Each structure stands twice: as C-alpha cells, then as structure tokens.
Length: 216
Image 1 (tube, rainbow, N blue to C red):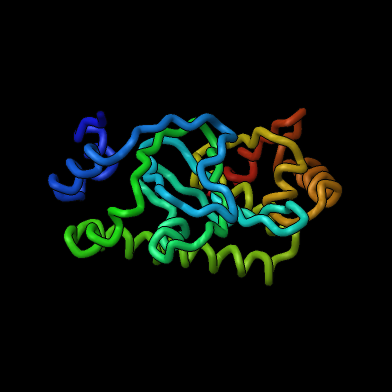
Image 2: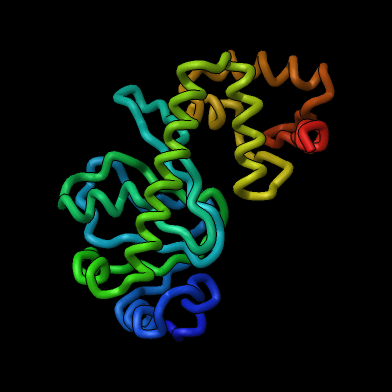
C-alpha cells in the first residue's frame, strides 16, 4: 500500500481526497535505468506518474531509429500516453527510464471520473498538455530548422535542463538514435566539439560541463 504522504511530496497541490485515491488505487513501482515502461503499438492499460527519476519519451520509425520527444520528471505525467488511454488507442511513443526512477502506476479507468471530479487533476492535466505541446514544437523546430551540430548542442543543453547531469553515459549510437541520424555523423561532430573545448570524450561517457558553463 502507498502512503498518502508519498504522493503529497510530489503532488502537494492535489486535493487530499485525490491523493488518497492515488494511494489506494496506485501501484508503487521502481524502474531501473534503461527499463521500458511503455512500448510503441501496445494498448495502454495503465499510466505512470513520476515520483523520482527521469523518464525519456521517444518516437521510433520503421527502421528502429528513435527521436527524442521530451523527458518526464518528478511530479509529471506522460500526456501522450494519457491521450492514448482516453481514446483507447495504441501507444505511439516509447517511454524508457533515463535513470533509476520511482513511479505510481494507475489504471486508465480512473481518468474520466477524475477530470470531472477533481479540479486540481483537470488543471494539472491541462498544464501538462500545454507544456508537452510546447516541447514537441521545440523538437519539430529543431528537426526542421537547425543544423545537426546545433541539434547536438541542444541535445546536451536540454538534457542538463531536465536531469541536471553534466555527463552523458552511453554510446555515440545512443545519441544518434535520439537525433535520428547516423553514429558516424555524431562521432564527427563530437570530435569537433572536443577540439573547441565544448565536451570531453571518454569511452561511453561524454562530459559537457564546459558547454553548459559557457551558456550560463
């Protein structure tokens, strides 16, 4: 059983009754880094709200290439999955733990009644949808209008803004998949960034603290 105080720490603005319902109906789940919460093309029977950690939401093409859409942080929900829940449609996104995370998983059947019953939930969902829409527009703008080196730089800046981490742990292919390009392109651009002093490259680890300091 989930204690209401756990819910209150991340969602203090919810009515006490709503926090109690979340505690009663939800399932507390620990998610390991790299673990998939939502797969593409699956029917969503439940939806996660994040208590701790970071969840990465991506879109994948038929060739297996990913495009990073946005991150879900503490006190947030995935509004794309919510829309799939409401429409009872298949998921069009993939949600993976960027780092170890803790979520509360709730059944989709609660959504309709919560929107009419709890004003704070309705406001929370509407604000979340507006925020995600803005993030998706930024992603679209990045793909449509920025050159790949600018997109790569934005990748690190956005990652810092969302995770506060100054290091990326993973391969060049991981970044390439998130940006929808090839590993060779990413590797070449990272070498250029290293020569400019923007990043420090190590095996499966990229430190981009210098870039963030220069942007501060």
